[in-house]
Image 1 (cartoon, rainbow, N blue to C red):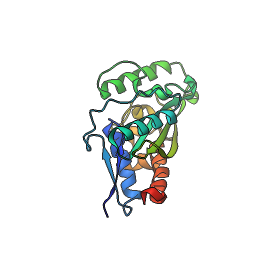
Image 2: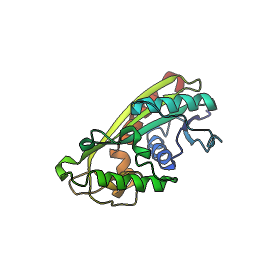
Image 3: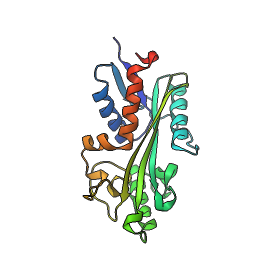
Length: 213
């Protein structure tokens, strides 16, 4: 049987790898193949304007528009950080919150610097936060097959630690020991993270949906 190919609509290779690792474990016997936009020669397609008010809105925009553009089944996610002391910011603006930087690394560093500055006078017990991930799976014609979501609760530390992960991971404290998301192994992060939860929920859809079996 020819494997069913699912294209992950993101230019972030870290996201593709996380999703691929989780789905490979859960769907090993179901004949799915997870590809990136680059894998299918679509890396140069302009990104859709993510002008939704919620993570779910933006995931849907990306999944459906990319699916129609490349005529393939597409899985997209929109995720970010919501900090309680900042009324849920940076939220859907997480990736480019600072407005600084050209490369992903430059943007991440600038965003983390801004986050620390915004919380400089906030007490430790008020630095609670959560990562949120919304996912959308679109058929090749742009119709929505399924949507899932996941959250990862923690708090914001006072200094960056760890070399794994990306984005705000080095500042996101995940347990009482003070360990950050960037100090987790890939397997540990996938087991606990917002994207892991959303992807596991999506895996159930992939394993049981009539049009994908």
